[in-house]
Image (cartoon, rainbow, N blue to C red; front, side, top):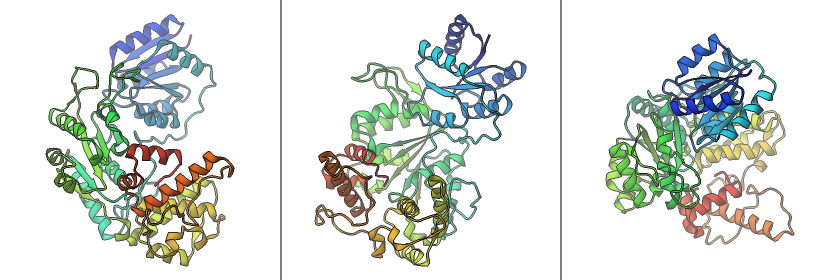
Length: 480
């Protein structure tokens, strides 16, 4: 008889799963804490563990690491109530068999358990690298000279970078709300991650939400969650970002784009430390540290009447300004070396080198898209350059070769396209839909460069709303 251990801090789930799986021929035990689970597994190893991601004394990532090290033959399935599946995907990458989302459906659980137990036993784990919750694509930001091999960040040596790191480490141990201000592509989310990792909440969730991509209708649901049937299309209960981040840190990017009514609701949540899901009358207590970011000056937005002054003062307990890349060019070599190494692994090819001519071009260019633009340029150049060879000027975008950032007006420029602009994948030239997609791609790229990658201004020039622009960026695989 196969044995199963259920770990969940909700007694009802433990009871219901124990009864259900026992009826289907399994030997089932349950516990509500990670510590007790560890003891139980030492006394009696289990064939399979059903583990909730969030527990009162630990989290699923830490428990998964322990199980993989001490009981490598045990199959682990993660139970998560989060709407964002990135946590669960990270857990699977680090050794979990699969994940299942709440609400739980008995037939789905039974099918997954039977499938997992029918597979060959997992190989022993030699080393498990735990990925932090909601870890996004690495967007390193220069912070200090304390760079260590294996770090997921690049630490700069310039004076602005040292000052940035000083401010970051000063505010991180506190529970202050923080406003991060910086141009597009400077690494605002990376700074937010570092604040979280240097705080007392580092063992708790870090949840990031891009407010710029939220429509007015979806913002309340994404922030506060909703109940089943709350509106058309609400086919199940959704856990919002505040609940996901309970005990940890919530990072709200492009905060200035939230509508006025959502700003009012957000102010209430900050004041009361309680949220109410859409379609529910129940108040849910939340303990969250807030970090917000904007590429626009929030104080100016307040003066223009676009952002509530009382909400601004709630956020503005501490402000961090991230200097653009052009103000810390002496850190450029650190970024380039790091990105060349990263891209070499991505492409599974030998690392390429920088020629003196290209280095001079990099130093002369003012990088309007900042670190994100630099990484995209390195990716393009590495793809076009054979392994072990030097990157040539031919592998760089046209605007870099001119020695200045892109300055043409998208209106005056019409539909003109840079000759050496990164292009879409090859499409059928006779297919009308493909031709239209390519024209749309080129137009969006031109406008983004003209406004230095400010998506709000780009959407205005293109005469579409921000949500539509974000959808098109995803559809056309544009990473700016």
